[in-house]
Image (cartoon, rainbow, N blue to C red; front, side, top):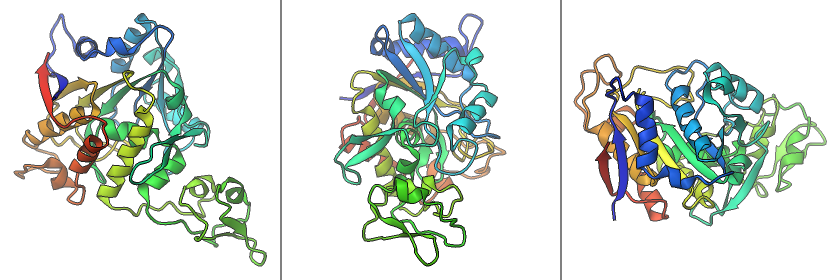
Length: 368
């Protein structure tokens, strides 16, 4: 049976602005039923990297926050720390960046909570027993929340073709070490020239695979014991254990979807999804810039099914002509995502999400 996906276009008028449309989408998609009095309601969003301007405007989040409060819920805005070292790799920098980008309490009306804590160590191992992972490391704030509203900026992405609801909750909810596991199929190594022998990595390694060499006083990883969990990579204060980005596009998409399954595991009947198909930029909002959009602003979509929602957004983007002045200017393309990122077989996140029961690719698009 096809899932229902609701679409609000970008037209506005005196008695119905875009904020009104977002609230209407919330109601039409049945999201009011997700919220019970006293529920702790997590808004999983992306605060945007410093220098990026493609993220969702905080005013839209405020309208949804106000509606959740009216329903008796207790909303908070959340995201997990990044694996790469940018402006959001620890909670202090992350919160500072969020506030600089407009997500202060005075604007959004809700507190900000970094899901995996100060340095990415505050997570819960959630059993999933799937193809790549037996368990996934989810930021604890997202696990403990009673309800979940996933509000995503739908845009292109160099590894997954596009980033929508599934990527927002999958990659975006994983703890820093979980992000390393999603990004890499290669076991880590220590750069002895950088290592200072502080031994922090030895204390955090759950497999006991790291020791300090008696001769060099540098950390050494035993690959026979290493389980590739990524804890050492994100623990090292001098980046002596390099981040490995080596994985295949289909594998990383499957891993992201397995993390999404972990997030949604205890949210049955308590999760809703909204995608903004606006400012569809060539790269993710994790980069410190925002390139010119590839297609026009299409609209805002909402559903209780993340697979159907992402499928609908992808179809709408691929149904558009590319914009002049964009990276694809002058080209006739049928697949925007492949035209930008040829190796990113973007359908895999959707087919795998359907295979493991997160939703359906079949949808009915309902314009409001």
